[in-house]
Structure formats: structure tokens, C-alpha cells
Length: 325
Image (cartoon, rainbow, N blue to C red; front, side, top):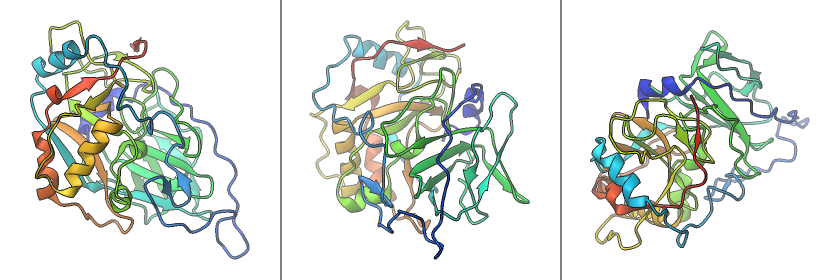
């Protein structure tokens, strides 16, 4: 979603842990993995980061004492647009125990992929300029994500990415490490999945992309680990750090909205949004297609999200600010 701007952030060397060995039963099915349909809290039998921080309810979390200053700084730097749903672009690939493991060839020498990714030629790569790829391996319950992904003649390549164990708390990457996003956060964890909507509730925080040059150049807070490293165009000393968590004000009125937009706004009030990346098109939210790859979302319903402005949020109290160079 950050288009070519995210490339500037692929300057760290992420070192995610090596996944456990994969095994397949004699019948070719995944050993120890049931064929379970996705739900909001379980994706084919795997958690969506079990526990903190994505599923923390922040309804009553304290507001940062400089909340208004940070939000005003983003707006004055040029982020005056509403939010929007980026639909029809992303899909979660589901790997089985017999999906081949391929080495990921790095497109930049400063970023390495220490573990192979489960991959097959039928897997989907986002067709917009970010070329994200997301794979959930349902036996190991790991998610594998990459940015500027390419696959040709049996070779898988990418600029940067990361993988995590979905049955554990989200573990931030090492300082200065991006993921498929500039912040080092998980694309899978913070996207609105069709399974969320089918279950009747979004039970996790969302990832949000701000307008480029309106947030901090080098500052981040956990659970983020890196930034886009794009210059801040404002004049305030209150530059919003990557990983900052905003909460839509409880008083924000969604009367008359359709069910999809209403559910997204409810998640923003209950779980909040993480500053995860930047882009050119406004304040974007990631949505995934359904498991068949089809786009089930209603553009007319979700268009209501454009009525949400940054001034409608409070900034949750920031952890200690860290910096990359």
C-alpha cells in the first residue's frame, strides 16, 4: 500500500526465528493439523497471534498527554484525508505440510531471508506496486510475509519480509528491521479479513498507512521496529512514531452506516489502529480477499470510512520512543 515509498524502509536485516521442520502423514495431509475453516480468532486452526498486543482491548487505555499535539502535527504536515479500505488487492495464501519450501533470494544485499518460505507457483502476489505476499503454513502455524515479491522460473525473490509463530504473542523484530511493511509490524495480523466479517466481529487491532512525509522519519515505539525513513514535512516537534496506536473516539457516530464499515469502526474503537506504513493515497486500511481469492467487499458500504479523520482519534499513551538512523 505504501507503493515504492516502502522501499526506503527495507534497510534493516530482519532475523526471524527458524520455523520447525514440516512433516506430512502417509496420506499427504498435515500431521497434527485439522482441516478447520477460518474464523476471526482462528485461521485454519492457527491463532492470529495469540494474545498481546494485537488483541488487547484498549477501550479504557490511557490517552497520551500530548495526543492532540501529535495528531495536529500529522494533519498540519499534510494528512487531511479520511480513511479508506484498500480492497481487492491482498490475499492470504494457505500452505499445507507438503507445500515446497523455497529459499527467498534477496533483491537488496542489506536484507536477508534466513529461512525458506512455503511456496508454490499457484500462490498469489499482490498486483499493485507493493507486491506483497502472505503465506500461512497451517502445520507450523507460521505466517510468512514479503514486500516487492517476485516469482519466476522457480525462483522466489523479495526486498524484505519476516515470519512469525501465530500461536505466540507478536514478537517485535530487531531494531531497524522492516517486515513487508516499513514498521516491522505484521500485515496479516492487522488486516481486515473476510473471515472477520463472517464471524460478526473484528477482534484485533488494524494496521494503518498514513500519508507519506506526515509522520516521524526515524522514531518508532514497540511493537514496531523500523520506519519508512522519509523526511517529515511538518514543523512540529511532535512527530508521530511508527507503532503508535490510535483509538477512534467512542462518541464517533456511525448511524446509518452499512455493516462492513460499522464493524471496522467498532474495531477502531475497541482495538485501535497501528501506524504501520505510509503511502500516497491517504489513510489506508488493508483488507484481504476471501479464501478463493475473490473480492467480496462492498465499496459503497466501506466508502463511509472516508468520513473518519485523524481528529476523530485519541493517541494511546506512547511507550518509550526509539530511533533508527
